[in-house]
Image (cartoon, rainbow, N blue to C red; front, top):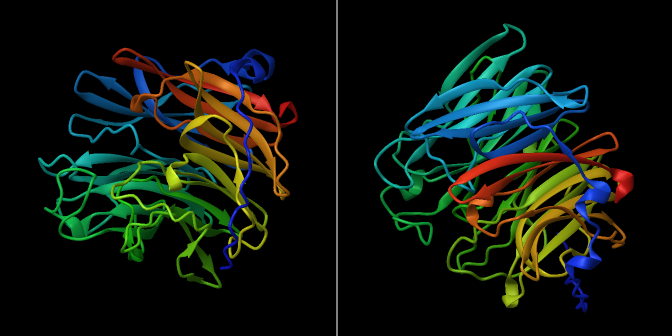
Length: 404
């Protein structure tokens, strides 16, 4: 891949009064959630929206999902629950749907270590109208870290999954600062709605330890992004695609050359429209925290010059959706004055940027999590966690593409 350095630009600092306010463009939705809830995850098919989340009841964690029909969320469905789950602000359950079949994941502790947990799957088959639950995604059998899952539909009823796998780090770390015995790896696996799985595939044998992965599809083939990790601790964003029936070698989306000794816990986001891709990510290379967005018109084989998105101090935590071959909607978190905001913007592949719109005020704390975006037709949907003391709740909203 040809890497082109982004030109230096002087970004205009904006004040809160200069941003479009939520009430002008963003419509709050009545939520299906109740109680102490967090970790929302959105998934959009061609015509239907889904959301999963977790409710905390003392030591019990309960996994739910709902779909959005006729302008409102349906009654929540309780998928699973447990007292031994790994609940983390950055490593959360995911949901996907494929012609009526549904996959929802969660993380379950496998030993007493802080970061020893497994990925468990819950699968609903549209063919049999039955659930199969508590299926372990990986078969290495180690008491190590497994998580940061991404999933996309594949074929008529199957799903392709990727995750960060710590089998080579077992016993080697007590925190996310370093892994002693070996590096975190990226692995992938095809999962069928009946719970059977193809053998897993090692996609990258050295990746950043705890940044979210993300995935999209082009012509039913997965294209994935993640934060890589070189031998000298450069942690930029890489892409792997299933091209011509085989996975490509890992390619750097853009050489930020961010050298950092520990994981920033700030993964990339990816979206596609026909053969076109948009990737959003956070970097703090050269001590300059920023959100960047890059477009590809050849299935992710090459990318244009990154577009600098944020105008104020940013926390990253990006999401992205595509609404045309050349247009993406990106969201991120940034601080303006005393306020931490979830911002969104319309961006074109030629570098043209719309005016930033505030989806909501939020908290800079980790517990506010990673806001979500999804698009269906000309509507953009957002979900995020609001934090009040030790309690949290999920909010959802919608706005039209034209509003941007």
